[in-house]
Length: 338
Image 1 (tube, rainbow, N blue to C red):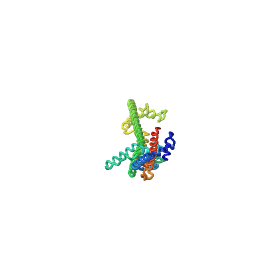
Image 2 (image 1 turned 90 degrees about the vertical axis):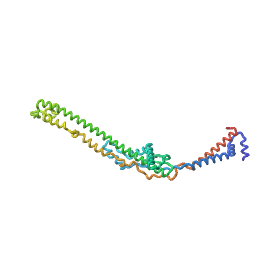
Image 3 (image 1 turned 90 degrees about the horizontal axis):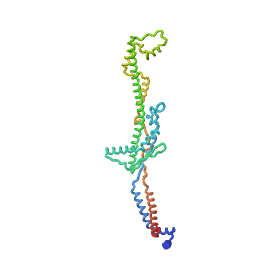
Image 4 (image 1 turned 180 degrees about the vertical axis):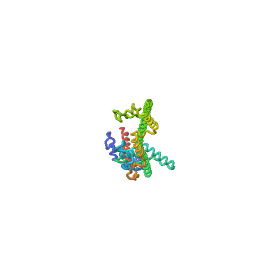
């Protein structure tokens, strides 16, 4: 076979048999390069630390678990009710937010300073897998026990942030409405006071007229062609002085010494009732549940890190390819073709 190969390689044309013979003569090159790449891949696969995963499956809350949020909401009110999907979307937003991770890292640092034990989270990663009607929190790390601990701790932080946000939004809506009602009540009281002042001025002018004509008491209308209600209506405006000095002074005394105009504001009691109802609608964080756990948080028993067999196989294939390329390149250079 060696003589045949030498004879073939004398020819100027390069055929498949010629290339095969070139590889055969340089088979030691190919073997050495393949062995080197394979050994390097074995060393890499052996030196890499395995990566484990802890998965926590989260389900939306039930309507009963968020019922405290919907007190005073829904039909007949101006506040839209909270649904489990809406509350769950706030949880998802906090799960993927950078702020939640920063808060968790801060919590870990503060705990480490207090206990003297620093729990590093540099090699721990968090990710979220959205699935139909559920979310999956995936925590990756090098220690099965550590990632379970971090998963639970991170969920506690996210749960607290999401609850504060949803409760804060709900209470803020009620607070805005309460402020609006208080402003409306203040405006009604101010208008009532101004109307009372206007009435006092009218009575003072009427009193001045009644005193000037010495009309002490209200005259009795006899033979009048208009009714008593029409007469009273006339006295309210330009003929108020007909009430007489005694009545005008009595009315002035009452208006000037009135402590509050509230009983004379028709819409005020309705607003006060609404304000009283709103004052007891604030929700506490402890009254609601943002999510439910589907099972428990547990780390995977099989490492999800680099697979040694795949790495070694890739190294072997790369070594064979590299060795063949070097052998072919040497052959072409020797023949003057490269």
